[in-house]
Each structure stands twice: as C-alpha cells, then as structure tokens.
Image (cartoon, rainbow, N blue to C red; front, side, top):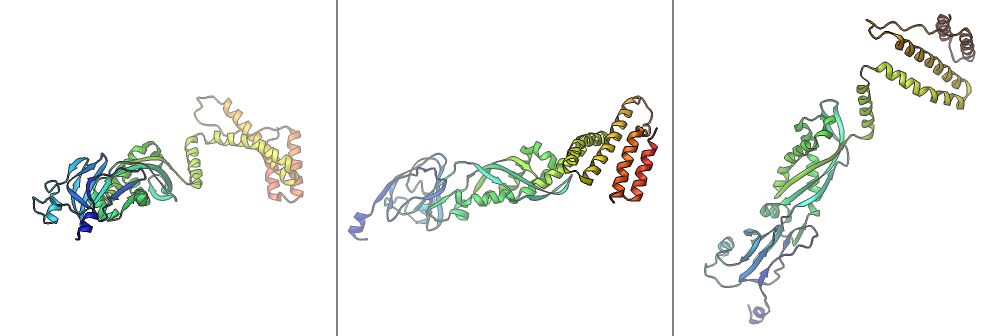
Length: 345
C-alpha cells in the first residue's frame, strides 16, 4: 500500500445503526475501503443484533449495549484472521445489523376458499382471516436462508412467504383441533393457537419466531352459507314443522294474491284459487287444533272443513272453467270435485 492510499483510507472508530422505520430487517454497514480501528466503539441498540462476517463466515455476534472492539471481544474473528492476541492494527470485516423488534399487525387471509374435512358437514370450503406477529431471533439462520450478503433486506420481501406458511397449515390446524365448523367462531383462540403451533417450525427454519396468531373471522362462501342457514333453520323448527308450514303459508298467501291480481289471466286465477283453498284448510285445521283439549291421549284425525253451498258451487264453476281451458285434466277436475262435495254440509 502506498503512502497516498494509506492517508486516503479512513479508519472507523464508531459503528452503529439507526433504524429508519422502513421495515429493514438486515443492513450491511458501509465499509467501502475503510477499516475498523482497534478499540473502536460498537453501539447496538435495543431490538438490534450486530454480526461480524469474515469472508462469508459468521464470526462474533453482539447484543444490545456499547462494546469496545479488541481481540478479547472479537475471539472468533481473531481466530479466523489468525491475529496475534496483542495486535493493535486496524482491520477490515463485514458488519451486519439485524432488527429483532416484533413485526406486528401482519395480515393473513384466504384469497380462495380452503377445503377442509368437517365432522358435521363432511367436506366444506371455508374462508378465514386474521393477523399475526413475528420477530427475527436467529441472525445466523436468517442470513444463511434469506438475507445473504445483500446490502439490505426488508420485511416486505418475505411477507408473502410468511402468509403462505399460515395458509398452507390452515387445514392441518382445523384437523388437529377437532373443532367442528359450527364451533370455530366460539373457539377462535384455541384454533389460532393450533394454527400457530402448526406454522411455527416453518418460521424457525428462517431464523424467525412466530409470536402470535389471531383469527378474526371464519365463514363459508355465500352459496354454502345459504345452505347452512337453511339447515340451521330446520334445526330450530324441530318438532314444530306443522306450525312452521302454517306460518309459511300465511306469509305466502298475500304475495300470491297480489301476483294473481297483477298478472291476471288463467295462471293468476289458478294461483288465487289454490291459495284460497290452502288458506281455508290451514285456518280450519289451526282452529280445530286449538279447540282440542291439552290432555288428549292421541291427536285426532284432521276434521273435514265445512263450506257453504254457494262457496262450493262457485269453486266448482271455477274448476270447470279451468278444465274447459285445458288447465285441469278430467282426472284432476273429478278429484277436486269429489273433495269439495265431501265438505258440503
């Protein structure tokens, strides 16, 4: 080295890193052609780790605090460079700072429904989303697997990979938890714990620790949710299917009558006729059931609904008209006529 090069070379005696808040996980200290002064001061702040690397080999690692760099504080680097324990010359080495602070409020979610096996419904497709938090805990593994010798590595570069780990183990977490889909919403904490346990080894392989996983929502695709709603409704009805059908009929009749009034024609008359007959039968049966004593040993057979003669004749005329137009067959007309005549009192 010439005298000019020696004078031009700068000797570094203060080494530190102030994070800029841009999500940087690993940052290489800019050495250029400079050398580190023996006895230089290394400042490592809280939530940081400093690592010296010699010719691609990780040497000494420093945690938070202020460190004076000597052969005593750099034993591995001293051994790699075959220094004499009493050396007093500047030295050249790569220095990397790593951020170990927790990366919070990272979002994960299913872009497409994930198919799982469920105790109640068999195979179902569900959607889920939540957030998670992680931190860098092993700079050696992270440098080897992710950051390498690059000048900078950010959290955004690995965000997609980490979310992929969570989604990859979503089905495993559901299977291991043994929680049916209908109970997932009430057991979100337990399910999130299962998901964390299933995914944590993937994070550890990269030198990361999966700190927390939360599940904020789990749902079915819209078409499956409609089917589930129907199943839940049927379960709520239970033994009162008859009452439910009566209620549904009463709700539907005004709409049928309105449609018949607006649409008119043969179809409208047929709908109005059918609705009228259903209403009469339903109301009669409901009133009859209400008059039966509560302590009846067995339910009585459905009573025959009595209609006035003029109502019977009016209905028969409408049925005959529908038969003449070809809407009712002879057999259907005969069956309806017989049914109505039985109700004549």
